[in-house]
Length: 397
Image (cartoon, rainbow, N blue to C red; front, side, top):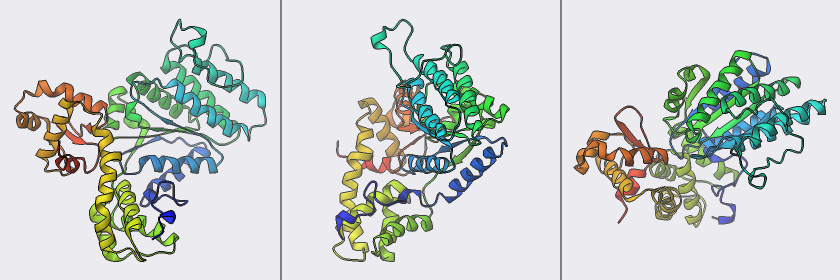
């Protein structure tokens, strides 16, 4: 098969195969857009799931849907210990520019941009020299007295309210998409919840769509007890067999090529139905296939190549971030689960290592912060990365 035409290569095709099986989520967001457009209250949305299930791709699709409806839309990727003001300012600047195309009052748009600039400038620490202050690239004077108090919760409530009113002027809304939401700092999470609460009280047309790891609902709940009323939680999981087959068949058929039923069986067994793995093994099988259609033998021959690529780019890059003590903890989890995608009791990990549970708390907490494991419930721990246990057991340290 021609590697240049490989439909599983990153960025190939108009509709990424990772999006297969997400019709329910796409349909639900259509309802959100329609309800908000009609002035009806609607909760913001939070997508949760393991690494590799396609949350980021789904966020991109939801953003495109909002833009097609004439909404302003901006996307943020949260980073551990990073301040929210800078990336949020850039995302809302993009959303306001989307709205400005339809707005008939330039002065009104400039006024909101001035408030946004004032909010952004507060990202600089107090007392910072002028040359060290970040400039947000908003070409209007900063406003004064609105969203610039320095208290992120007060400022975010005021900013969201004003931006939502701008969208209301043109009969649309704003969608703010936040990836890796669990990495936001506690103060920023609290402020975001407070702002969403205020928006829901006002019925304002601004919707937050967050995506993160399975423990994100617990992070939000720990910040604000009322968070479960603010968001509609949607769990994104691996694909069913039918949807996994569609994720393979659709891109293959777009290239006027074919694949045998036995090859589909082999791809599902190798990938476990996880979209990221489907793409990785599908790409390798396409490159390995000498003729059309792709056969089960092609998948078998290609699997080591896909495994090697995943070991470096998907698993290895995360494993390298762990300290020796954290790697010991991860290895113990893998051994206790026999490499399966299952949770394990933290007390079992301590027993397995012959250590006191309290002595392992720093390693466990650091692994959670790094996004390598999550606590599904009290006393339980699991990998955030599918097949990570299998990868660890196959390593030769």
